[in-house]
Length: 193
Image (cartoon, rainbow, N blue to C red; front, side, top):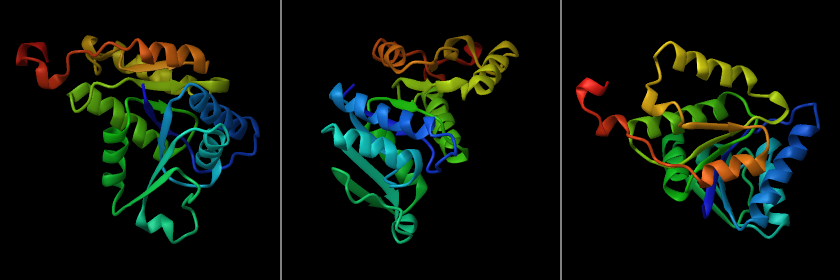
């Protein structure tokens, strides 16, 4: 994995552990020589991931829609800042520029990005690993809901392993590195569906 798209919140929660986690994730990826592709913001966890990586000498590519640049949200300290017209272009760039997806705590936008990465993998638009860092148990309920979708049959057996969730970054990155692509829906026959 040369680059990972990192999905996280642009908010700054009251609990300082989240910002510290984001900085450490950015720094650790840089130490491992893994570049970051992220939302291009300077606020919240987004800004912390970027500054953690940059302070550790890492590559940081920000991809931000024009509408957010003028609000003084853009992080001009990135190695490269790409300004795009729409959120669709932003998310396509995340997929095009990265070798996988790493989600840390965040809100609605983070969930949108995570589930799109899972859905696109399921369909066959990419075959990259999709990792979820469940730090502090933040995603316990989401992981339980994912298991519920599996148990009720809304996630096919071939796709049950797309979402790779771990509470520790080292283990998560090791599992992402060992990721084996699955059979996507585009490669299945009607009888498999």
